[in-house]
Image 1 (cartoon, helix red, strand yellow):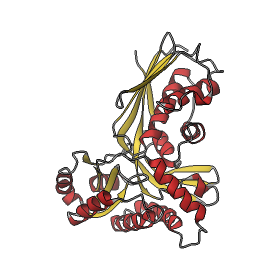
Image 2: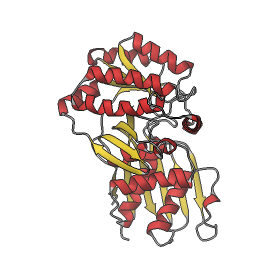
Image 3: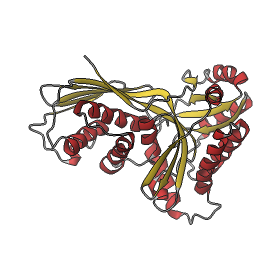
Image 4: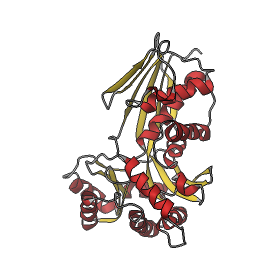
Length: 347
């Protein structure tokens, strides 16, 4: 090992259709499908090989931990509070890829987006750390393996509830149609004409509600809904999933009208899977956006707060952005990220 210092980043994402059908409680018995787009907002990490111990800091959260790796035991439950993602990602890499040799290191992370934003920031953070260690240890892990490792760390080690689309988007980047079928997840990058990508970027607006929410609570509510469902063809989550297939066709045929229709239907169906997805603030902001030029809207991620995604005629986009900024300045037109997660050595 000769590399002593690396930086890495992984993109956040927006989801256009199918969100919720990537939850394992659904996809273990049904085919799940989502359409998501990586955007030019990132989770970053900085890894330096140090002389003693393991130190991690989330600079945007003002939170840090230190472990004396010679004195502290290495049990899974060493941290029940604190930077669980940081410690468990490090521990997973050392045990899985470095023969349980715990390298003294310092990890600093930060993110473009607020906590609980609904843009997949937690998963992007794990992917960025895995990408960084992949560079340091010269592991040669591909995008699939990095995404699958991130899923294992979040869902199996940290026991965080959630779906499985965020990790693939953060690892692969670009515009993807992803299918989830009993543990066999397949990423289909969509080849969309450049002019239509520009049209989409000019039409998609993200607005932060000012509310940070814990997605775990909403996803647990959705899992309860899934466990009670008989999954007839009229089931809300199956309709959410089916809209991912329709959205794929709409993107490939450059049909803005169909995209608008699917977004609005997806919002209605997804709201049926949990009463926590849309609160009064979200409903008021969506109503405001629709009255001021937007053609469609949906909550990003699990809902309950974070960002709202609006689809708006480009001619009205700046006007709507400026009006929404009166509620929250964190309102902007989306820019896509074509690149996968990246890591580079620092001299």
